[in-house]
Length: 352
Image (cartoon, rainbow, N blue to C red; front, side, top):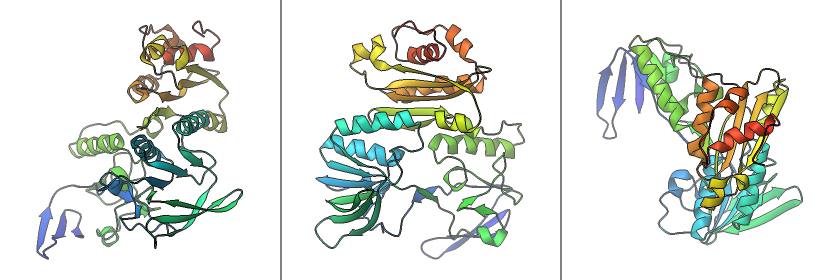
């Protein structure tokens, strides 16, 4: 437990009760996050588990219900299904991986079903009975209530910040919706105290926390830094097929008022993908129709988490669609799918 005294001092109480005061000119709060617990899903670490326990189960369950289909839920769904566990995904939203582009969600659901998983969207776990050998989950669906049985239930309904009982209130550090509020340099409203990572409002991703930590340290050192562009953060989901995305989805671009051009290139048309036996999936690109601004890129398929960086750098450099078209991509490679998708958007495709 940490009890704050002054901005440059903190008292640390160890597990054995001993106390120690640490002093520093500046302090960075990096307390991370933990699995969100819902009232209907009380995590007991045995039959109702969260993601950390899912990485260290003593035995493989024969069946598993996964509540939530974001990155964490989808990754564990793929992992346990590939081991032979019967997996059922229960998702409250109308589609799985709901933060992704709609076309990505449709493709992943198709692939997961092909792999033998059961997908239940527009569904909500109302309660879980753990009194028996396994779990019985009462689930509300569009067609009515059903009861699902499994050995174990994984709650993957998000992450909450670890900001309880660390003395924020004593210093008047501002929080909102369970997160520490920071400025463009990761500073809180209290001079000398910064915060980074999952305890702040940015995306709860390792590469985001790393960059925020560097920005905070460099600002403390007096360096000039570029503020984080949270609309150019790549998101990656490490299931099979992999998902990678950056920027606007098609819906978000339309909602923002853009007139858009959209191109999609399927890996079945890629020579490298065919030769590799990895033809599932596609690359989808979204451009502003007026200026050719690269608004978003969405990928699903083999190794796409390694391919998305090109789109991130292109957007950072304000690269236009025509510049991507004129940048020669090596053939045969999976990465040329981004250029080919751009060609589709502008009616210049030659390979499909």
